[in-house]
Length: 181
Image 1: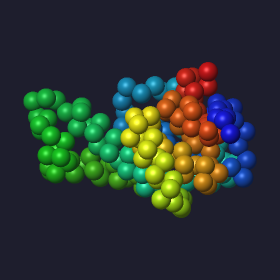
Image 2: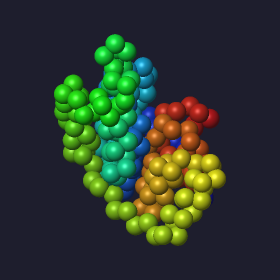
Image 3: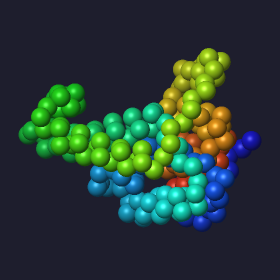
Image 4: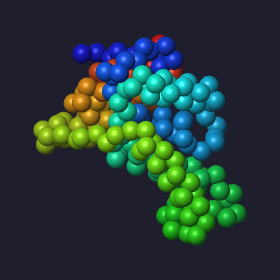
């Protein structure tokens, strides 16, 4: 099987579709305001609405939620003025200043959970061995490989903006021109 990549803006969803959103998509939809393109934020927010309107299943994996939460927290840490920015992220994370940030992140993460259902991981040791071998060879990101395998095992379409999935042998829905081209 080779990649099948479709623009999320024009893909015809059906109630039989099941999708897994990559963390970068949840960041476009529910992440902090940043340098990200409003064009992509709009494309993925509209895609989510269309997916829900078609009655598709939206799945979430703990790995994706973890990436969303960690990226969101690091965004705030990286935006702190150097005059008040702690030397290490963990110092910030353990400070009183982080509490309102953590509350905001948890609120957004709950929105994701409200719109999705948990995946069922069924990884065999042999599959993990292959994933670890590819990772050890410097050929692929470990988390991306896990998500790709999760999609293959559960017949899920992956909604992502990450061009690293260009050779993952998946059905991909995206607004990223590098994946579409």
